[in-house]
Image 1 (cartoon, rainbow, N blue to C red):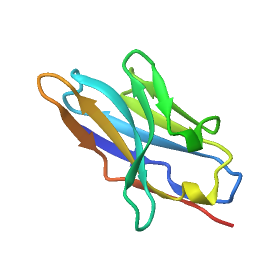
Image 2 (cartoon, rainbow, N blue to C red; image 1 turned 90 degrees about the horizontal axis):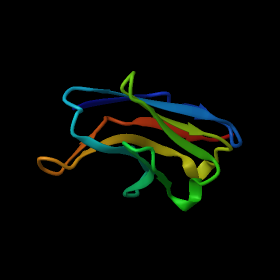
Image 3 (cartoon, rainbow, N blue to C red; image 1 turned 45 degrees about the horizontal axis):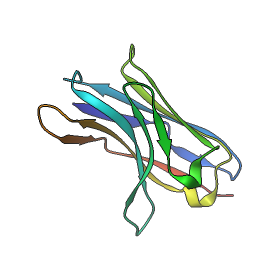
Length: 117
């Protein structure tokens, strides 16, 4: 499974960005997909997740501002981010989780999001 993120960039506080993640390879066993982010000097933290059935969850700090979605026909994952804040700055990583036949987490290379005036 290969994951390639795009859509990052520099945006002012209050602005919006949409991140995309192109998924390829053997994806039939992928159960969930989502996003993590890593701020400078900090650990990689969970942001959002979506299951094959469409169930979603978010870290509290982005609820009401970020929306995760997927287009299974195009093998794409998205993260729509609105009302961005400086604390949203970081490298955003797309992930895909396989549960069967064994647990494997796949990661993209990341895309930089910088929120600054």
